[in-house]
Length: 493
Image (cartoon, rainbow, N blue to C red; front, side):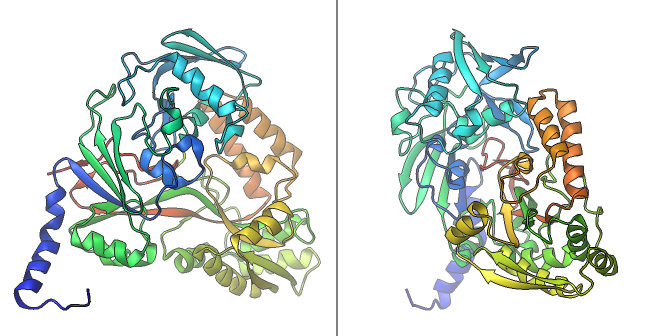
């Protein structure tokens, strides 16, 4: 430490940095991630860092979510739905084993969901599965779920990390010694340093190319940058946008820019004057210059949105031109609403960079139409108490990162305070619909209503910005669900 390399030492160090990425080429990969998971059981914690390591790698569910956000078969090879939409019957893949060699069957499925719904459950999203009334083991490879009401989101929820299948023999130890059915088995966890996975030879599904994957925990951007340049790691799934320029023109790397499930909103208290007036919300929508916000708050990597839906989702519709940037139109609407000189409001900002930066830009934009914003920086605990729980706010900026969470708008007690019976009825129908084409039509209608009502200021979808060795392929460009899925990653030479 503190020494300067000269002469041969410097040449050796530079040479190593240039050729190091080649050492990993073949069947192993080393991935840098910013956060270390608190546990390795996705059914026992809400942290995204858990799923980054284990989802679809160590653990699998009855269904799985693919890179587009669509539902695909997982441990269930197929399923049928009763005419009343209340019974889902799953046919399981045969000859599946857990990593300890024990067999997987319908009893494991029943155990998993009894555990999720049990009184001692620590599942972070137990509410997703409370629609389950009963689980019946028909035979070792067939299991049926009886629901209390139709649920069009049920198959998606079965594909979340919260619903991966665990075995009664090993479930209690999964927090530190995870045993699943996935293509990779757990090898070791060096706390504060790394988690190592290896290919599981008897895996039931399509074989994977990688024989070993190491997740290296690096929280600092500068350290992550140096690790990539030195070849100590082969890539990272979500790198700091402000530092991407280092890699964009370097032929040793590829930069993958996609979207996450993070809809970033100028969230509005619709129950509170003057925001209960549609014309005021429309005026604010017209006053937003999304491009300037995206350039300033995300270094140009955010994707503009016009409603509450992720652009990578197959149900997405582009509504960004519903209220195009138009200062004069904004002023006219404010005058029509009784505010020819504008008004004053507060903007509470949680301690994340995209919110604080967006807030400054939006305050400048709104000032041009007469809306004077007082920026109030709050810690996240205070944001949860003031904004989310007590609804004590005018405006705020936050990213909603849960997949398919448009249904929140059907709850008039949610912190937005949006109360639209037409929308509530539509979501009720959507939730009860299992036909995919009908669900898509209903989801588009829901997006259109939110855009029309300018419920919130729809700003951008948070970007996923991955930096990878140029010889690696098969990484997900978008992030429709929490996880860093290894199954398709491979070296091209």
